[in-house]
Structures are given as structure tokens and as C-alpha cells.
Image (spheres, rainbow, N blue to C red):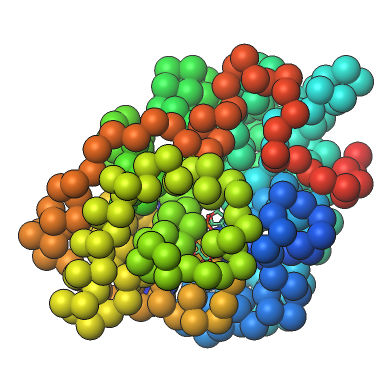
Length: 350
Ligand SMILES: NC(=O)c1ccc[n+]([C@@H]2O[C@H](COP(=O)([O-])OP(=O)(O)OC[C@H]3O[C@@H](n4cnc5c(N)ncnc54)[C@H](OP(=O)(O)O)[C@@H]3O)[C@@H](O)[C@H]2O)c1
């Protein structure tokens, strides 16, 4: 495994981050295809053996059970100081707004619940999962700064946002002015068949040394196999991934075919080609696994070097895509609507 600094932080992370959205109680959340605790533990154990020290979960994943499984496995198989644990919090709900719970109080409740789920007294990276259109950014940055000062999070990151929200809506500028903690990483949706981050976010982050830790690095499996080869439970049941990728499948398949061609040329898997490409652009891609061998494939990608010609060949057929997933749904006009993301049936700590 190779390691690198996470942006302007002291965190030393593996070049592959283990995405933990596929771990958790399948009966308690957005995804019916998640794997149970026993299989989660096998994958995390293998990840640690392969040198992965960076783990990404969220309070929203399967009513907190992803955090619980990950926390227990890391406690049993690793030393706390040897791993970098990231989790995420959601925007305030309508019910919280009606009850007068402030942005600061909301963040404190969220982090306390996540720490209880994880069985830890701090997280290394606390991520603002998606923009909260109903809470002033001053309250968010102040709330996050308080939890950093309280030692509950070492650093803060952000996910699913536009560059203008980080910069022009002055999140980091405001934090700088007030002496608050600033966002050191961005977890956006970025892979070979969805490259909209390259318009503004990638150059912005390069300029500011903010770490890019993109999610759905394999387009939820589409960049790991040829179309029609899936047949996995997730491929059949992951309606949200279908929403993200089905509309553009015809044009994306041209790129996927080129991934397969290069995989054959180098005698490696498609996963390795897809991640080797992303590794030329970002700090540490967040990669999901539902089987033991998945994480081995991801770890191997770190050692594969593509030539400039390979990179050009993979990139050449891309055409701009409409926004998909959270970025398509989390619009100001839809802020009060019920969405697929939620904390589920878990009890939020005060
Ligand atoms: N911030 C956000 O809003 C957000 C949103 C989505 C995800 N995430 C994070 O990003 C992580 C990854 O996202 P993701 O699961 O959507 O996408 P992904 O990493 O693009 O895809 C993971 C899927 O790819 C397939 N796969 C992985 N390795 C493979 C291998 N070596 N060989 C064959 N197939 C392989 C598996 O599909 P099968 O299960 O079908 O075999 C696996 O479930 C999540 O766990 C989560 O931590 C964050």
C-alpha cells in the first residue's frame, strides 16, 4: 500500500479508502443489499492486512449500523491511532427545525450519536454529508469548530457540494476569518464515467491543497465489469445507483469497453484500470466492497501505472453529464422534501 497526506492535515492515509456504505443491517435503511456483520468484519480485517488505514462511513448508513459494525471491527483488529476514521452528518430535518434545534446543537447531537455507534471518543475526519440549505453556513462552521475544539473530531471535510459553496459561499473563507477549522477534504462523485468534478472542484482543490476523496470510484460496480456481467445482488437491487447511471449507460459503455480492453492488455482487472486512472487525479478514492476479493482488487490498483496514452484513451470518449444522485436531488427548492437519506430508526443522542 502507498500512503499520502490528506490535504492540509497531519493525517497520513492509504491511497485507497474503504467505503463502508455496503456494511450494515439490510433491513434498516436505504439499501437492501448491504452485508452483515460477519462478512463486514472479514473485509475490514483483509483491508487492514493489505495496509488500508482509511475508513469512510456515515450516520445515514443503515440507521447507524454501518458505524457500529465498522467501529467494532476496527476496535478488534486495529489500534485506534493506526486508523483514520471518517464519518458524516446529515442536514437538519424539518422536525428539528420546528423544534428550534440550532445548527450547532444538531451537529453536536449527530457527532455524539456517531461516536456512540462507533464506540470511539473521536473521529479523524467529520464530513458535512450534503449542503443544508436551511441552516446558515455560519452555524455549520461554528458547530463544526466546536466539535473540533472539544476533541470529538480532528479535522472536517465536506461532500456533495459545488466549488462555489466551499469558496464563494465562503465556508472556508468564513472559517479562516473567524479562526475556525476549515474543510480539508472533499468527497464528491467522481469516476471515469462521471467527471463533472473536473470543471471546478478539481482545479479549486489543487489550488488550495484540499484532498479529493471521491465516492463511487467504480460507478457502483459499472467500472469493474462489462455491462450485463453483473448479476450481483447489488446490481439488481441498488435503485439509487441505477438512478445515477442508467440514463447515460449507452455513452458510458464506450468508456467501460476501453477499460476492459486495457485490462486485457495489462493482464489486470477492470477495477485496477479504473482506479489506477482515478489515482492519477485524486488523493484517495473511496471504494466499496461487498466481497473479500473486491478489496484486494482495489489495493492492487495502487501499484498499476498507466501511460499518458492510456489515460488519454480512457478519457477521450467522455461527454458532459447532467448532475446525478445527491447533487441532482439536494436542491434549495427540495430542501423541505423527504429524501432517501435519513438517520433511519436510530435514536439520536442529545
Ligand atoms: N458522500 C456520499 O454521498 C457517498 C455516496 C455514495 C457512496 N459513498 C461512499 O463511497 C463508497 C463507495 O461507493 P459505491 O459503493 O457507490 O461505489 P463503488 O466503490 O464505485 O462500487 C462498489 C461496488 O463495485 C463492485 N466492486 C468493487 N470492487 C470490485 C472488484 N474488485 N471486482 C468486481 N467488482 C467490484 C461491487 O459491486 P457488487 O456489490 O455489485 O459486486 C461493489 O459493491 C461507499 O461505501 C461510501 O463510503 C459516499
